[in-house]
Amino acid sequence: MYINMVKLDIFLKGCDTIFFSDNLNQNNPFEVEEIKKFLSIFGVEYDFPDITYVIRDNDEIIATGSASGNILKYFFAKCTYSGQGAIGIIYNSLLEYVIEKGYNSYFIFTTPNNKAIFSSLGLNEVYSTNSVILLEGGFYNYSNWIRKVKDYVGVKNGKRGVIVVNCNPMTLGHKYLMNEALKKVDELIIFVVEEDLSIFPFETRYNIVVNEFKGDDRVKIIKGGPYIISRGTFPTYFIKQKDKMLDIYTELDASIFANKIAKDLEIDIRFLGSEPIDVVTLAYNKSLKEILEDKDIEVKIVDRKEEANEPISASYVRKLLKEDKVEDAYKLLPKSTIEFLNSKEGMQIIDKIKTV
Image (tube, rainbow, N blue to C red; front, side, top):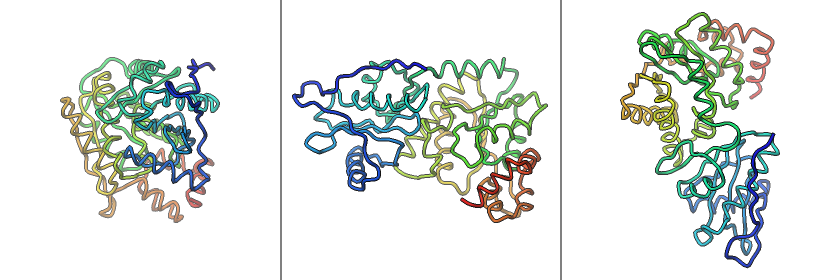
């Protein structure tokens, strides 16, 4: 594997002192408190990424950047060092890290004022808002991804709708939403969130949905990739954290879908399940509806299917499985999910749920 490495000087331009980027020790409470304090200047909360690099001057942090998987973020430098190469030094350290980890593509999540820096380093913009910009580098890019999706979906034939699901696992609530959508469209695209951060692995979640709709030519099941509810576009989704970054993340993910994916795939309508409990999903649905409707894309919110006057949810199914109430859980699941849970791999996941 080869990714073009940009060799950068290890000193800040215009400074007499040579500066190096150091790996922050997350096991050191003093250093953790130090990075938290530094990031708070920029209105960002430290969420313990996989690795963090810092540059210090006189023992004080003057610049930083982090990586969570192949997502590079938290690129900040003190204003007195702005434009002197600090961000580039941090980026080079993080790029070496993602290459060592075997990633052949990566994403930069940063503030718009850093666009010129990263563009000069050969990264391409995915999308930007007033608050953030998402860029990408390496072999994987949006153009290649959307081209493959378009080839699989084929030429549009009538009204085209879309649903995005995680399905951890797929429930009768998901199936109800999908069936309701099929009543209103000629074609339905179902994106399954591809990030492997759920207790049910991605390939399992994807295959369950595929099996549930095999033989139905009107339905296309597609892997969500890095552009639909991913750690790059909407990391808050996976930690269910309602903080000051939630609005920023929801706007970015919703805008990428509205202005790029929906446009390229000629989407007429997106279906959402009503959300009475999860504040993160509720905030996302609200933002998504506003952005899509502003682009003349219809949004239909379908009331959650209920059982015993309670909304059916994947989290409740997992709770029942944890409590060894398998029969009660099966009442809330479609055939394909039950078949999987009865398999050897499915039983292993049930055992795992009980230990979490």
